[in-house]
Amino acid sequence: MQLELVTAPEYLTVGDTIDFLRSNSDLNNKFYELIIVDPIFHLIGTVSLSLLLQSSRSERLTDLMTTDFKFFKVTESKDDVAYSLNQYHMVSVPVIDIDHRLVGVISIDDAMAVLKDKTDEDLKRLGGVGDEELSDSFFGITCARFPWLSVNLLTTVLASIVIAQFSETIQSLVALAVLMPIVASMGGNAGTQTLTVAVRALATRDLTTENLKRVVVREVLVGFMNGLVFFCWYDCPCVVSKYRTWFGVGHCNVM
Image (cartoon, rainbow, N blue to C red; front, side, top):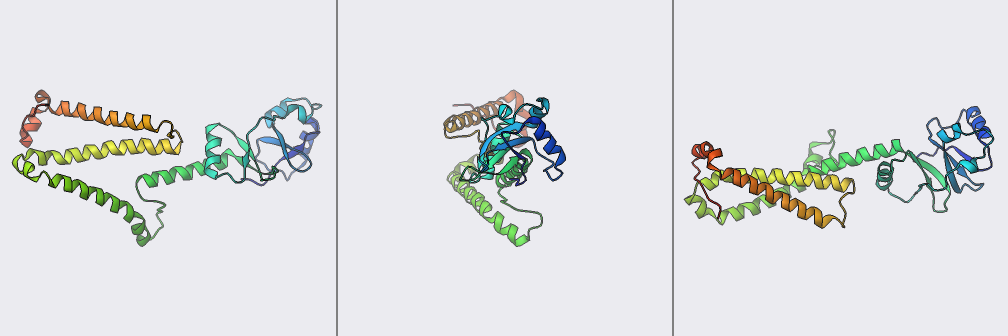
C-alpha cells in the first residue's frame, strides 16, 4: 500500500479544500479521491476528485462524501486485495489497521503489479518450473524441476505397466503398437486443455466448491464426446482408407 495520503476533515468546504490542494506542493501527485477522516484518523468517507471539481465552492465535504465504500484491513493478503480491485473495477481503496484508523491506500497500479506476478507464478506452476528465473544456476533449476519430472516419470511407468499386461495382444495385432503414440499424444493434449482452463479458473476464482462438480462432469463429457468423434472419424473407411493402408491398420467395427 501507499503511505502518502490525501485526507481532509469533514467540516471543510469544497473551496477550502481546492485551495489547500493547490497551495500544498508536498501532496502525492497520484491520487484519485479525497479521504475524509475524523480527528483521530478514523475513516468516515470518500469524495472523488471529479465530484469535488464539479461542486460549488460553498458545499461542505460532509454533503458530498460517500459512506458506502470498500476498505481493506492490513491483515488481508495482497492477492485478495488485488483480486477485489480488479473484480469490482475500483481505482483506489483505503486501508485501515486493527483500530479502524486509516494507515494507507491501495491503488489499481499496485493491484495490477500483484496480479501480473500472480499470473506469471500460475503459468510457471502450469509448466512445473516453480519460481525459476533466467538468472538461476543450473543446480537450482535442476532441483526445482526434479519433483515434477519425478511425478511425470511415475505416471509414465504406471502406464507402461498397464500396456505390459497386453503384450501378447500387441504382438498378435501390430496395429495396436502403431496406435499407442496417437492415443498418448491425444490424451496429453486433451489433458493440457483441461488443465489450462482449470488453472485459469482457479486464478480468477471462478472455480469454487459450489461449481466444482459441474465443471468436472462437463470436462468428462467433453473428453468423451471428442474421443467418440475422433473414433468414428477413424473408423470411417471412406475418410482414412489410405491412412490405414500406409500403416497396415485393418478396419474395426464398433461393438
